[in-house]
Length: 130
View (tube, one colour):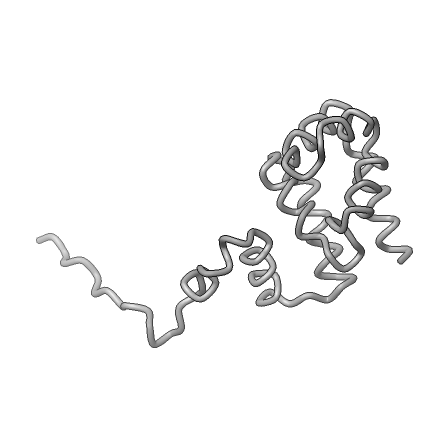
């Protein structure tokens, strides 16, 4: 739990008021406008997400998605580092998480995957010019 608190504190330190408005805007479908107006700090935003089951120490996919669409790769990287080092989530699990964080994407899970060696088409090198 200490690592999770440390992560949220680190993220909060790197979210300006302008960033917060952008993040709140990115999740306007999940936070009613009257409640969004009451959120004035990143710590309050994280607290709201936790209370509404959008964020937990073992469930970070929602904020990963929000940081991704808000174009904050620096914050996204910190969350992914926490997930891979503290939670020890494998690369396959990470792909599953990315594909299932959006309900409509679940049906594509089997389509979007890395091909096996047998499935890769090998092309011959181009002919050499004389």
